[in-house]
Length: 224
Length: 224
DNA sequence: CGTTTTTGATAGTAATACTATTAATTATTG
DNA sequence: CAATAATTAATAGTATTACTATCAAAAACG
Image 1 (cartoon, rainbow over the protein chains, first blue to last red):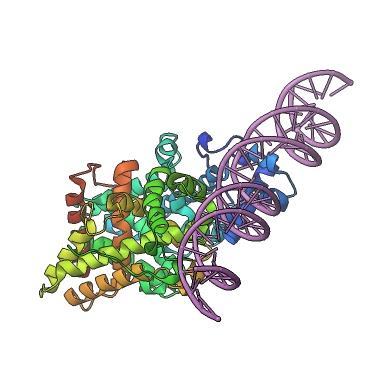
Image 2: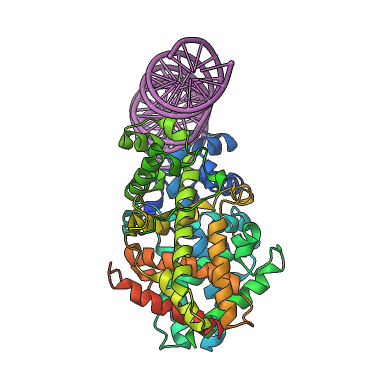
């Protein structure tokens, strides 16, 4: 079996966490802890305790917890785009391609044995609850200049190309693509915590089907 | 001229800021400071300095800065819903009503002289950058139980009723309503900071027209 | 085997998010 | 109207957070 590993922007870390044992422990444990505590209550001290190391050692890998969060999120978007590419390989029909892509975006995320040290289920929950905190900051322009949002933009661009292939005349493909990426996560969050804001009923197994119908309808009716 | 004032949930504050001089100064200055510093860098100490009072005094009005942010955001949604109600009064055609509502949602927010101590332009920028931080927390269920998100839910419900009046058979009105509320703000944020994610070009005066076209098209095509 | 690199242990700082205490002011009531 | 109760402001203090600095021990590396 092939082992997956992605190269992420060097601006994200001080020292590449994929290169060492301690680095991988940091990634593994931070996913677990951010999922459990929420990003706001997650600290490098708690992380260091958890892996039996020290705060100072963690700082040798990541400048601060904001960069660590972006690292995890960039990893997720890169992984997701890879999976979409893999899935749509050899599909010629634009409509079929867009539908398959939407399927991949909406589907339940399960543990991917190709990447041993990452718990994709926990990471998916982190995406739902924390993604927007990465760019809703005062440093957004600086972070953007440093290329920290490239994986998200890249996926967005890919979706735009699929949309445009189906409907070359639709005027707002970028807005639609970025909207569905946020929408998918929001609707799952609402289903769970603010049910009056969504028509998706919370159900760990079944909710993804209805979510797909909602998204597919919205996309195809809008661009037709 | 009528003076507007809204009654917000008592769970939001320790002491009603509308009732005293100091309370109103807290509201006024917090809008200015959160807009300028961003919510993360905003503290009660800075706020207290700004209005020539003390941290402890601010804590007598709001339990913490999270509740203060929700207070501002609840005020905004209540104000916006009031303006929509006012606008669509006596409009009989469901289509016309929905369109007017979308117009109100998308339009540029300007200073409302009916509410002297609130700078709606600054508050609108706060909404764009900070709204999602109010519910993307670990305490969301508790806050929800305390009714802290009622104004947002109420506006959402109203939009649902307008959608349903136009298209009774559309299956996902709640999801659509909550999506456009988030989408409007996100697209304006992207236009400004992450332009490759949107087809709206940043332009403080003109951007709202194109935003409206995007939203109107998305809504009407989706529900038709 | 010696040198560079990496880690761990310890300590320290400035800022944040509160809490507790006391002093001053205002309101209530006999 | 004076005594007392309640409310508010000002001051100070605590625990936690987000880092930084230093130095010695351990690993890795040529």
